[in-house]
Length: 102
Image (cartoon, rainbow, N blue to C red; front, side, top):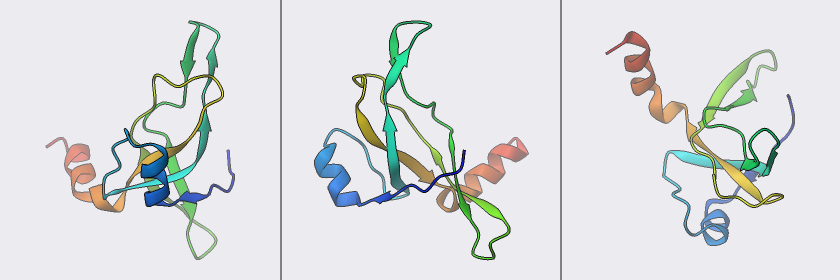
């Protein structure tokens, strides 16, 4: 799915969600709405690991800007919260090492 998502200001996010851990290598974007999972009567959000892709300035390629790093398991139905992403650029060495099996 392709759509525009707003970047959420770090200071505003931490005021609105004081219990959330927001690291320096993370960014918040868009809003995820909690909804009911009809198969098990739990409130679910997207799973961690969802990609944040951005169109490269050349207009032809997509790049992986970040990977969602957690979900809120105790959300109420209809809650809207920005999704936190780990910046891909901040984790390149770990990604390379993990993919190499080290």
